[in-house]
Image (cartoon, rainbow, N blue to C red):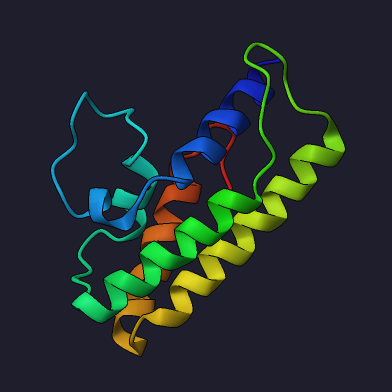
Length: 119
């Protein structure tokens, strides 16, 4: 059950905008923009890049299935969501310059290392 809660929290957090990721957090360290903040740490997006990232996020936000509060998603839904987040992350990474991609990859690896249970 704890795995479902963590997965759902992580999946919902990725849906936050990159604009939030580059601004100070409101409401503490666990807010919805935390994942984006960590992915884009030390990366300054140009206005054109920001617009593309925002568009990518909007597209994938509309693709995600809705959840019933208090009911964990079934394994097929979790697999679909994981695949959507992977494609979203790959699409956002493609917007970045090679130097920014290195930072993005480092940030992603650091996030994986901090995850409960390890990478």
